[in-house]
Structures are given as C-alpha cells and as structure tokens.
Length: 204
View 1 (cartoon, rainbow, N blue to C red):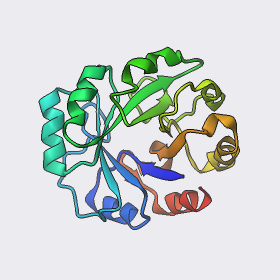
View 2 (cartoon, helix red, strand yellow):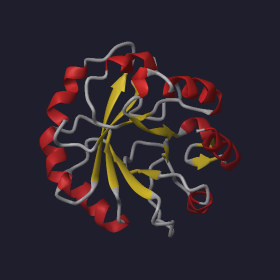
View 3 (cartoon, rainbow, N blue to C red):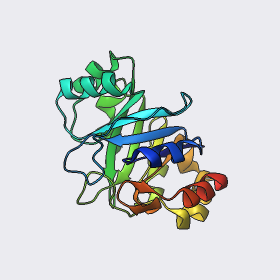
View 4 (cartoon, rainbow, N blue to C red):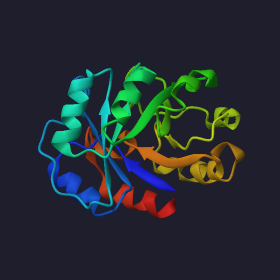
C-alpha cells in the first residue's frame, strides 16, 4: 500500500519525512490554508513523488507551480471541471481529483472524470477543503463502481491503524491505491511527527 504525507510546510521537516521514503509528499498551494506552502523545496529522493494541492486555482497558476517545483502530480481539491483536468494532463503529470464524502456519495459524479484523471482521492467533507481531522464511513466505498485506483484520506491517524487493516481486507478496498495522511500526524499545522509517521508506515 502506497503512503502519501500531505500538508508539508517546513524545509527541515520535509527532509526528515523524506528519510521515511513515503511514496508521495503533498504541498498545499492554497493561500487560505494554514499549511500553505511558500518556501523553497529542498532536494528529496526522486523516488518520492511531489504533489501540488490546489483549490480552484487558475490554470496558469497551477502550470507555473508544476514547472517551478518540478511537481510529479497535482491534487485538485475544488470544483475543477473535467476539461480543466484534461488540459493539465498535457503537462505530463499525474492528476488526482478529490471528492469529499460525508454520510453518502453519488458515484455518478465520477463519470465525467473517468478519462481525465489518473486517480481519485476520497476525503471527509468538512468546513475546510482537507485537513479537517476526522474520517468518513469507508463502507460507502463498497459501492465504488470504477476500476480507477484511489487514495483514501480524511482524518487518518495512528489510532486508525487497526481499522485500516480491516478495510484493506474488505471488498471496498479493491482499488485503494494509497493512504493519505495529514493533520493527525502533526505537532502543529504543517509540522509532522516523525516518530508517529514511522510507526504508522511500518503497519501498512
């Protein structure tokens, strides 16, 4: 199972987390976020994919960040259209489209994006576009109609390790590609707890 650590903010912490060799590191390019990334990106191993997280950003803003930070993927957390995703694919980059879930979800909403994205990411619907710190009912994903691989996100912490293991044995997890973690592994917004991350990664 792949691991994505999102909401990275501080150079020294980025370098520390990179030593754990997660598959993806996420950087939030959304000014309203407390984890807004506006620093220089330190050198990290090429085996770790750099993900830029955007919320209804202008196309040129996204493309500029892709080139500046040599991003490997973009995660679109707003109401970005399928056409927007299609245009970004021309940048030779992975497209991760986010869908937020609370008590239920209409999987028909995925249809227009099937050919435009490489992955979906299912997060918990909350006041903020990510980083809300609580999980949704993963059983909803047993009705997942697609074969597209997806990231599981939303309030996942060490205390969810047992539930993650159970989920990964279930039918609902058939196309689960990666686990995405953020706020539950922080000592403050954007600053990750290395010890907790290491323990969690060892249990995946």
